[in-house]
Image (cartoon, rainbow, N blue to C red; front, side, top):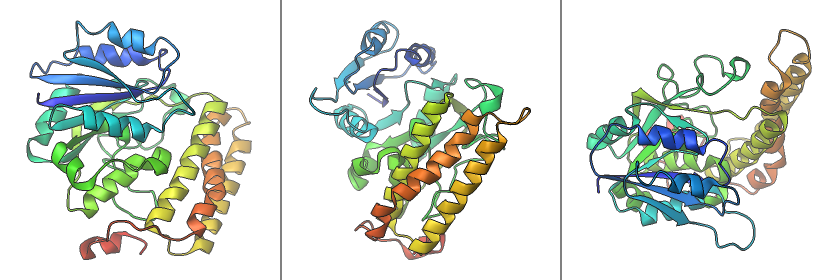
Length: 309
């Protein structure tokens, strides 16, 4: 078994067939397996995925939810799927996106001389024009990996685009489930702190689907804000006062842009609300930052200039 494609899912029936169709179209004919890490879906997600068993090789459904209490964070799904994988290459995707043609073959080929890779992202195909991010979007073929999340200015790959080797997983361990939505940023940073390089694969894309409802984007933005605060608490912050001031500025700017979006000819409120909600989440998550830096991997000397330490 050369590669394992991992898809975490909770109630993804509205979009998962589009991703499964894309995976079934992959032209890589070598030996690979597919794992759906199901977090206790109550819709038809599992039924839909099972219907592809004749088109996708070695398809498995992995139950990652015990049936008791709240659903697990997505990092738990990846952790359990990494442990269940039979190959030495783990490649991630998600239920609401769509792998581009040739994506799997290019990802596996890129890992012939790498332990950690990330494909490019396309914002255009699955989103309305007024929801597309500016400047080609995050992790586009032209922009490459983002690195804008503090407190460390190290690049990272979005979690639905990565490929890692079993060796890397054994070296740095499982994703940190306490970090919520920023588990992927942390995993990329930990890999680099351990001496691994992130390799960008610009020739293929994962078509990324934005949330488009006002409520959905507000909830997501706030969740990411709290998770970013936890990430800051883990790696430390140069100044807690500066952290508060920056996010108060972002909150104020986000509120102004949200109000501006009520005018005709501007981006709609559903687009603008994410920035406001993210800043609100980061301020609400200050309780984590206040407790100081958690014990984490030491920062090598050559990377310290890229951090806030």
